[in-house]
Image (cartoon, rainbow, N blue to C red; front, side, top):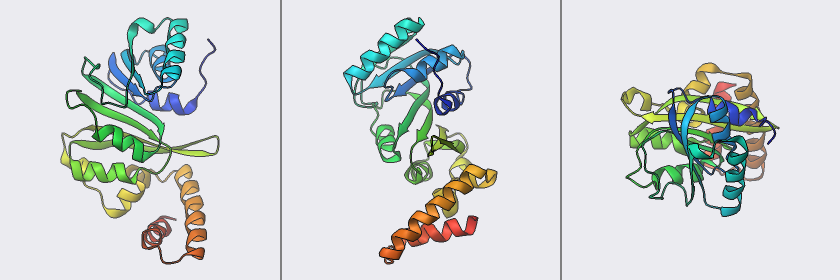
Length: 224
């Protein structure tokens, strides 16, 4: 099997900071995430979970080729509703999905599955996940950034079991954009905000009576 060259996946995997972590990859597709985690000595075991049999089987074949199959349990299931996860999870990775789907996976998980951290890579702005962290108070946002790959923007977050409730105190701008994103004020964030501004402006030109978009535009303008 060829070396996996995917900056987004590697950046996501490198958010694992606990040695010999037990991880889960929900929506694992071809198991590239777990392979990268093993290759970089970031995990000792992985639950690969996907709701489609063929991609999961392809992933199992990839794990065999790399010699990592014995470090995994591969499960065909709908998100975290499964009862086949039989170890506490240090990091559950959910990558490449929309924020609505990601939040549904988190909020419908089997309550018997113990997860210390979620590593999220969403393909759209996860305002709803920030709102969930503020309202739920079980998990706090301990890391956030934005990256660009192949002309697409991805939003990285780490949700950790909330020891300090200060992690969940976000003002309105921080809910929309992300507290650490605002603090870092990266060139990628600025590029995203400019494109988002152009998009919202074009929508409002056709239909100006959209309060939520108008309000988002105000927040974006305050940051540019």
